[in-house]
Structures are given as C-alpha cells and as structure tokens.
Image 1: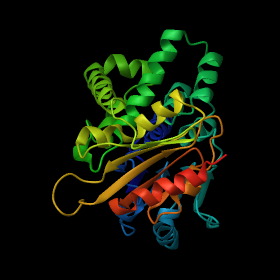
Image 2: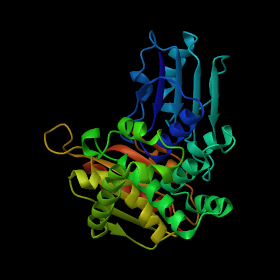
Image 3: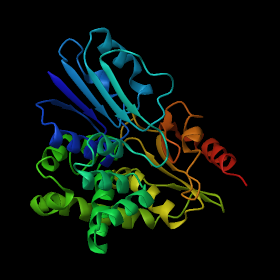
Length: 326
C-alpha cells in the first residue's frame, strides 16, 4: 500500500497535485491542518510498500522515517523546512530538501517534473507568500494581470484553508480538497470546473480576513507587530494568511498573529498558537525565533509555535522585539 503524506496547506496540496497528475498512483492520503506535521506516525510500517512525503518537516518525522527505512520501504521526501540535522543515507531514501527563502516544496516538484504543471507550483508560491517569485513566474508564463490576480487569490485561499486547530475548523478537509484539485491539469481549470468549492473558499477568506484586519495590535513598534485574535474558528482559519497580508502591507516589519489552540473545554485552555512572519525586506530569523520555544519551528521567512502557554505571551513579545532590533 502506497501512502501520500502531505501538509494540508497550499504548498503541500499543489505539490501532490503536480506529482499525481504526472505520476498517477493509487494511495492512502495522510494529511491534516497545516500545523499537524508529525504525520508519518500515522503510516503503519507493516503495511507501507512506498511513501511519498511533501512539505512536512523532516525533523519532526525523523524516527518514523528511520523505522520505514529499517524495513526497506521506498521513501520520497520533498520539503523546504530546516531538517534539523543530517539526512539518512539509504538506497531506498530519495530526498529533495532545500531551505532557501525563495523555494517551496511545490517549486521543488515543479523542477523535478520539468515544469509540467507549472501553474499549480506558482499558485503554491503565492500561497506561501513568495510573491516576488510567483509574480516573476507569471510574467515569464505570459499571464495577463487578471490571470495573475486569480492565481494569487487561489494560492492564498488554499493556504487559508489549511489553518485551524483541527479539520473541523476548516472549510474543507485537505484530503477532500486534493481529490477535487487533482482532476484538473491547471488551477484555472479547477476554478471553473469546481466552482462551488472555489467560491466557498474565496468567500470564506474574504469574510474572515475582514474581521481579522479590524483587530488592533496587542503590541506594535517600528520593527515588530503582534496581533492577538479571539478564541473562534474564523480566527484560527485566518491565522497564517493574515500574517502574510500584514507582511505585504508593511514589508519592513516582522509580524506575529496569535490565536487560541482550541475552543472551549480545559484541553486547549490557556494555550496559544503563533504564526510568525519575518520582514519581507529581509526574510530571515522567523525560524530562529520560533525555535526558542518548545513547539516552535519553520523556515527563515515564516515559522510558528504550535503551543505557547498563554502566560508566556509577554516572554514571546520580548523575544520577538530582541530578534528584530536595529
């Protein structure tokens, strides 16, 4: 049994769409919300005959990778997050892991496939807020201004759908969304052929963003801004894309968007999730800030903390100010 393991955001979705358009394969899908990254633990090693992993941090899955390789399970791994150490050397292990701020997993797959489904990769680049890269690709492809705008909105909305404390917070389970997307050779065809799905994503994004951008900063100076959103599903959905929007509005400032990890009950009480964006003018340092906290990780330009105790919020703000001082 083959397993396709992928992050539930725009990059993970578009990477797998490209790969399965080029290489159709019956597989069991393993995915979840964007912050659900220890996904390889869900793959039964005694059932797997092959595993593809896309846009999932290697460091959080190292033990599961080694367990699969110990049984000689072929494993293809593509990602753009810091792997947290050396990669295993094994004849069954193929890895494409690059961490530059201008690369995402879908762009790695695009290169791997020789640009066969380039528009999907460009949508993912927009979704990961690699806007300059995505715009250059649109210009090279000869897209009109209207086509470029539509592709950008799709990437942003696919990314938006990945954020939440659980799949119940999302408009669509990423596995269901993938099955819709993989039926179309290009994102433009998807937006027409799966119109109802696309409209629900776009309308949800617009409504949630309007509420989020009305929220006054918890802390702000010339270098950093921290926005704390209420304990609500809409706030958890908008967590990541709002950080991207704020970064685009103020490219010289670092941003953090803080949400509650769960709604109601004692399990999530007092815990926060943090989405961090480095200044677009110098997209570095987000990963280093996140790693100062137990559940933090990510890449240079964009990172996050999965669980931050609420009583550590002031500590985080202080650390963020220190990270981007003059």
